[in-house]
Image 1: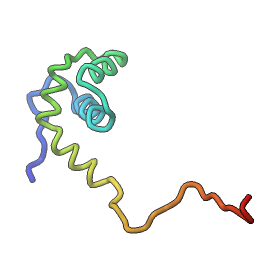
Image 2: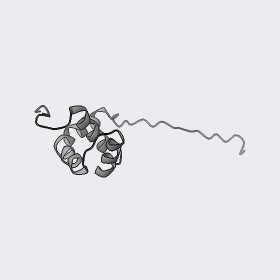
Image 3: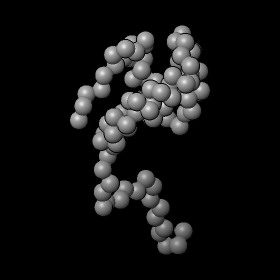
Length: 87
């Protein structure tokens, strides 16, 4: 797999990574990501976020999927209700 190149981008790598991570990790729109970055003082348009997600998104999404726990045949109960003598 080719390494992701951030050359010729105006913003630092950390900002691009954070914007793409926000978009794929949480149910946010491009405009929501734009607003979150604006609150941190980063002026970026939603269209730029869209371009970043198209370019860098597949690699980030793949990495997030790999870190997700694998499905298993065992079930874990959160709560247990026990009835004793019909009470």
